[in-house]
Image (tube, rainbow, N blue to C red; front, side, top):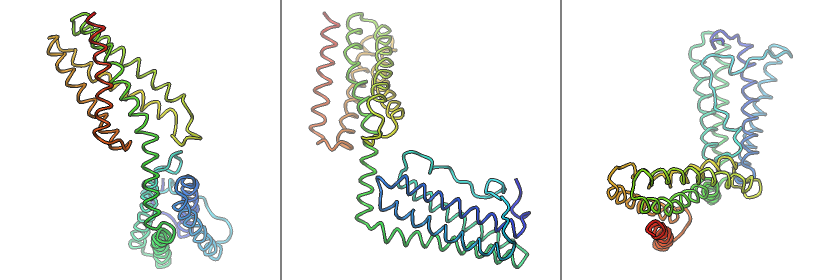
Length: 318
């Protein structure tokens, strides 16, 4: 990598042209990734991509006037200390807040970079060139604000925020809640049945561990194979499966770990307390994200858990 102060005026201008082209393509990717779920914000990034294209053409005209047709290949990654951006535009699922923040960082960092470069330059023409580039980046930032104000009014932002919340519920909360409910409730019967049947904490722990891990694997595959997310908008199947499987295992492990205690009745009391906490967490999630009334959520989850718990005790005691 080369230092920025080692670049000639020709190379600096070539670098600016490449940066404008790359930023324009990033904004176009943002627009394409947001078009389905956030059409208003997608329009903003399409217009910002067009602005980048216009700036690139202006820089090209200046370059041809001074240096001719050949443009040397000078890229960001070839220059030490230049701005590097994580490739969030390559993500299949773009978050609207992440994209807007990334765009602001791109413009602000580029502007600061060019200002610092202009300030340390001793050549008058290079200083003017870098100052012009800093001004262009400042114009980009103002353009972004203007485009957002024109195309994303407050009511549209509210709608997009609500759409983002719905997608978060579909892609994270729903599979996670399904796994947590299955792990917390379905493993109650085998764990407590083994505990009351044997009277030994270790046996109950082994049964609970096997039930939790087995249920996690089963639920993970079931969620991942249920649909590929292309029609339902539920996101990547492997991610949903991973979330569901992990939460299923976690839900079962919670009331299994107390049986590592040697005293059987102490382990039993702690496990029951953990179950109450687990059911409370499930009720809170249903109220917070699934719009279920809190009392209704608590009664539904508590009734189901009590039935499974009683089933395990009856079978284990028989």
